[in-house]
Image (cartoon, rainbow, N blue to C red; front, side, top):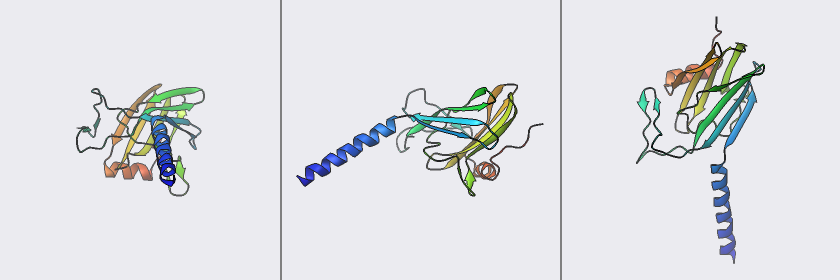
Length: 168
């Protein structure tokens, strides 16, 4: 009887784990600048169309390479009634359940808007094996990702300066 109960618990945990892994997760927070940010991650499913390049190199999927568990489905920033979808392509196992910041240690996402059509943002993400960063610029109401890199130099720069420099 004890063995059956143990198996039941293990099976129950496996089902629970699978259910949690298959659900989308959403992180919402407001930056010190007043910009609201929403990051949605969803379960990763490999398809023939999955082809991403980071630092100009194709991300390999196949034997010997562990597949991501999630991908960033969307990143939305909102300021004074205006919202923008930021390019979230090729961003895997990026946010998880972490908070916006660990006070006194690090803030993982930063940026601000000088008006509703001019903004800059930076994020530090992690795919469990290494950190990577992204930067976006919104000019005249058009959002463009300007950086997606796992270069240690750039990651360190963004970790020390999560808020981009002022736009003139």
